[in-house]
Length: 388
Image (cartoon, rainbow, N blue to C red; front, side, top):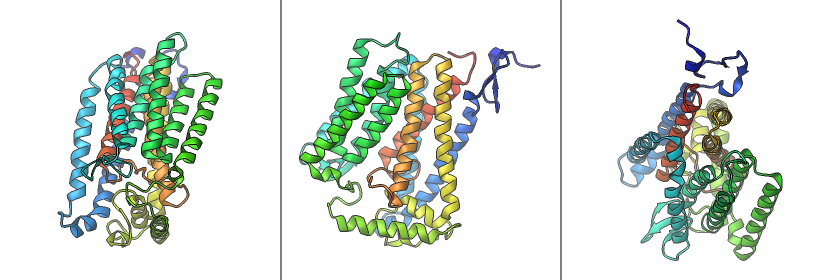
């Protein structure tokens, strides 16, 4: 018995509305997104184990040390994300009220002498987590929660609240995490603001303000312009950067088209700095070659496409929060991946940004898993004709 239009989902290859007009904004299904996410997660864990076991053994840890911590972090994040998504969207949109103060406080603490390890929040010299990465996640939620999609829903109060919150976050990100995190978060926020149809004049003024803020901070603190390598090497030494990037490019070149084989890479055995985190893409490229690189780039592109299409679908469902959040989270994950790939290949001077799903970083893995769970939930809800 055929389903009535109100029961039709967009799990089909091409969603057909009740009036037989083709709606391509829902061409990719939640199931597709789930498969892409699972492939990225499992592949990331396998590559992480391959890249990290020599370092774990050399430090006296079990060979699965980094792998197991990453798995535990991913599982906890998925469970927490699933619990949060049980809430209706109108309550989930208030989640920024928890994320925003935590991000602001952690960034401020990082600026206090004795509580930082490079750009990381630390206690007694022991790094705890990267507050800049968390702050970008909080900024996406804050923009989505405070800025409705339509002009009719937008009030002076919500615009002023969003402006103050995001400006404070951006300034703290600049001075705590450095120029790479500031530029990344600025690009994401500008694109999100454009998505919710903020006037172009406001966007231009926001862009000019961000450029002036970065220029002024760089004049006051010139080290902000240097590659912020503090998540890998806590000593500012340009020769170490050059050596690390040289080894990284050599590993990528040695991988060739098909790679040396998973687990057979040589650079992780001592030549590569932080092969399990910042430079895991170089290990991946060495072992799986150009074919593997093209494959993961393709996966991240599909990840972004599904997020954007979910955002388009949310416009039809008149869910402003879903419009912004699905767009912002998918942008955040894919732009992080792009920054890391280009940096490791020596094409972009942005260090400290990890490769989502792959790099060993407990806070980065948690943010990636939470973002993916939220995106899946939004894709599922926006794809159901009978759900609001």
